[in-house]
Length: 176
Ligand SMILES: [Zn+2]
Ligand SMILES: [Zn+2]
Image (cartoon, rainbow, N blue to C red; front, side, top):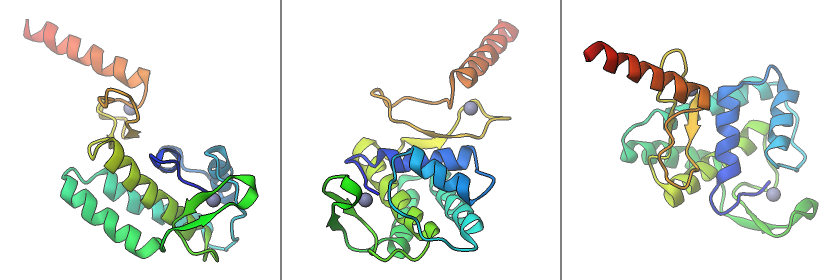
């Protein structure tokens, strides 16, 4: 488990879990692998609901509009999930930093540490506004992590961008 300098994989993984919640624990682990995590995860009976709770908590960061409020919530998450940073080189991944204790307590704990630090790195390096919900609105409430160069991504997908464009066009036609 490691965080690149921008915390990108961790924040994208959190959004993926929020937008497409896996049906079981194996699905969560498969998703973590998909986003590049290679460590052995501890097994617990309540992993699935506990990780759901981590994602629900993370969504309060996503939905906090004010940067100060966003920072306050995220600081609280980091205080409860992370430990002092330490260097590690497990699984031939090269030297990188971990922000949790070496003896991880649970899958939810590991993901909470990775996601909170990753989100903090993403927001502080790319911009505090680069996290939110798809601007197309109803029926889409997907989380959008903006890693674009311009920093102006509003929609979760081309489909939603098109839907919003059609809506604007119709509004203009109705007005004119
Ligand atoms: Zn690692
Ligand atoms: Zn959308």
